[in-house]
Length: 470
Image (cartoon, rainbow, N blue to C red; front, top):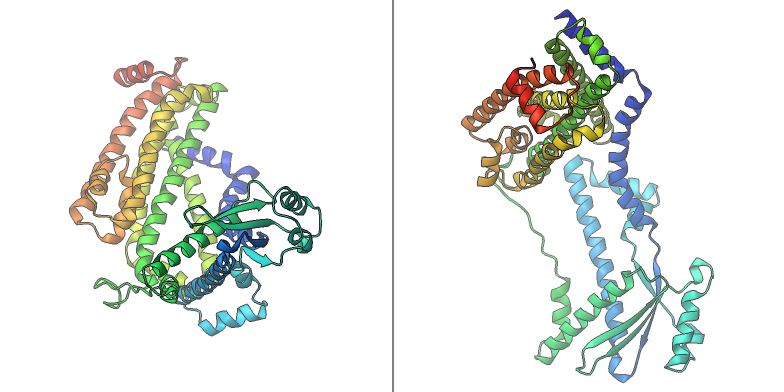
């Protein structure tokens, strides 16, 4: 036992004392924050495109007005969406609406204004373009305008020629400064679709104002459930268990994969450097395997504790009410026990398997023959867990939850739906029985791989298991 603990301590220290480990550990929360902030930064930094609208011929009269109407409608939708998002944030965080509005005012409303601003603005037709004769002269004038190297506030980004085809349907030719920028093209297409819709309805005797008002309508839908905390309206607090279960599945997948991969690389490196032979002279293969699995488990636990601490501190400082709700779901709702039980079983299954593979390998290329199928297996529950969030009791999700290699990821995601005890204890028993079987199989394979120079193959792996490492 002492030798096992010494090997575990050595394995833990080999990574925990390196600067790279802590940098990569802290990089994940940083990139998680950036992952949410980058789309906002992209949205706020996206330039507003200056667009010129030109109606070609008497038949096109009114189409420019349709594009302007679509732009105004889009602005109203953005404002309404921002208001709904603000209300949702108030409900989720418990911060009074007045405090949120006051904070926005103190910051000049910069972020909200940037998020709600239009993607394009209509500008007057430049004199050089208005004076150009339709045809080649007009086309040349457009090319010069869109190619001119001028200040941003004086730049024309797109010129749109509005017309109608032979059937009288709205159409357009869109010239843009950048060939890869289709923002104006997409917006104009949607605006002309609305214009054609109004034209068709008006041709059928329906007032165009009615059509416009119908398109602008956005119903307010409120969800209710007898299983909500209030017995009525569904709140953010009611949805928290599902969100936490979904997040737990992904965190477990990441931690198990990370820990098992560290173990694989550690064993593979020590075999190639002949360090494993030195260890075998003073400890048994079983003690080495157990020590390595325990050491990397402590390393994985360190990662989880650091990530949890950073997340908890951020929530407590920014959204204390939400932090309390999350803590209540995790601790009082029993989610923590789901997480711990399935984390232990899942880690044990995959860790010993990866360690056994590493004992047969001296280079990463040697491991690819067996790692490929294992990684394909691990991808499957990540795909299914998205379905488990919406319909945790779907037959496919239930069946796959009983497959031991999928159990650690799917059952935490199903936990908020309170699956029957027979499924909870049944899947857990199946997982731990499989984990113990994997320990037995991997132990024999690890012993054989560590004591031989046989290259990794299905034949050598199976032979090691049958012979028990002798």
